[in-house]
Image: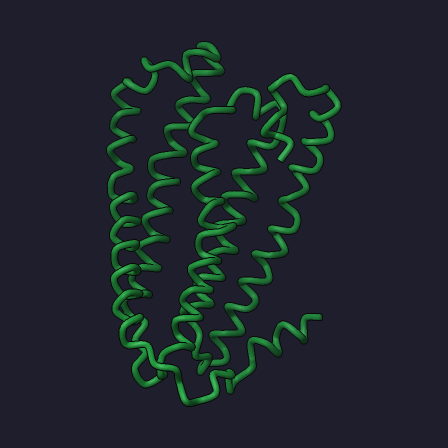
Length: 232
């Protein structure tokens, strides 16, 4: 978090301290991504794991947390880069990806899991929620990689080749290529909105057909849990 107040008049000591600890946050995210992919392989091998959809949200959380907070966060945490990029679209890309990774998909996975165990298994249909899942992931990928990051690359080029102020000026945002990239963001944003509508509407629909299962919701096939224990 030190990067948030590097340039607001704090003592100089926060630059080296902040750069070290902010950069080190990439390490646990690498392990988190590795663990998520390992559990995904275990889930596929198990075959009959009933909570695949909630677990997909957890895996997506690990992936986007690695991309947003890990990879993009690593770059903006470096003081030399942060000085030039602070307030640019690199921060926007980092924030959107990290928000979905650190909080968004994790919370949605928990909501999906609680919803599923509250419904009788024979009446559970996760097809619409799965469609929302893919709308969110594809939309976020389009937003970040097709629109936001290309704008940032142009912005950083303007900062380095012209001046610090030019990259943040209204004239920069009015450039034809930048305006085109803003419009290119529309499909990704639309998919995210569509995914939200699908998820919310299906959540409400399922809420009115909720029925506490008479069966024990405990997973019969504990391959995923055993995989976690075996890793220890």
